[in-house]
Length: 510
Image (cartoon, rainbow, N blue to C red; front, side):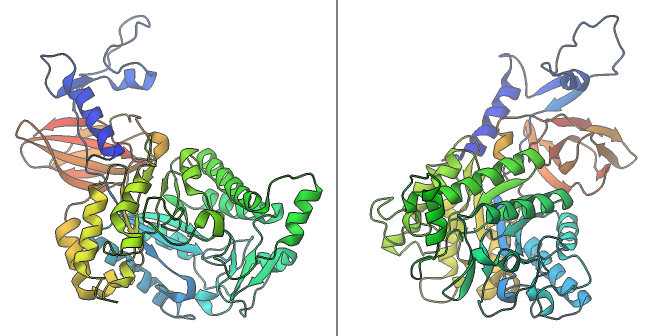
């Protein structure tokens, strides 16, 4: 079955390739007409003729699409840095090695945890440096890990998504916090809860602070995405201590029952962040990775935690309202486990996908080898099921260590069997159905130089074969212009913008 973005690509191909009954799969393209907003084929009558040069031959092209992501976890130093207090050069070397692992596996996206507990893996006036860098919260490591990670990822053709936790203030309640950590500056709304400290989602000051942190990060850093995991209200460990907050809500005239009010608190934050991202950075993908079960019995036969009632998360609403580009439900059970079976769960979630808003399942890579159920074949099954389910757009793996150590040969399996050929990530939902202007392609002695007025994510190269154009090379657009070496033959060169939209291919003959 074809997922929505594959269907979109097919429709685009047919629309361009078919035209009149006697047309072939190429057309002439007037870039000036495209810039004016007409159909790109017939100049608008605006006075005396203007010499716009020879027409450009174009062809319909479509690079393969799939999110191939991995979580790079910093909380408790799970993945990086390997220990606290390492030198800047040692931390940088480790981070480079992990990004190299992502490339060697065939991945295209890294979810880098930069706010694990209301702290920062980048210099910030709003929150202190993370303790996981130096061993002391607020300790300056002497460099900027987020800026470094973005540069290094982009040089490798990887997307870098900033992974943030909105409410967890401390992963361990015994750790020391320093200003401007919100558990210090908003201490009356920071609650000990089990082994954690949690900020109260029902307090406007907490919500405004989270929005300010995200706005600051988006303004200063060239990230490709913003990502939340499954921590909203904390997983149940007794009663959450928000009596005073709820009493203030009702005394102010609020009428929602407490559970509905809690869900609304989370919903409003997700909505506002979605609107903020769309307004500030329409090239940034915003998504959330919720717990893998929405409600018991949905679908039939599924049992487990009721996230709607227990952590007050309503992911189907976020997707339906368009507040997020995608959901990455954490389907952290083997396909053989009946009450949480992978296939019915992935199919249930995928039924929520619409208009380019996709489901990108999260997979429990770190369980590999932990029991007889967690084998390489189990991971193969899960990827196969994902690819066979309409509405999905790839997979994200928790977390990078098994790929890095090549546990049980897993990196080799994915590099050889699943990700041997590069893929673009799906276009952003906000760009669903949109087109992109062709690049300027200029001949050189050994190929072409490719440039564009817009900032590009990549340049795609196709070679004519069997009456069409076959994918040959995906080139990250780290520089402008991009140099492409070509041998004798007919080629199509296309541009991909920061939203993931690919242009028609400019046909070149050498």
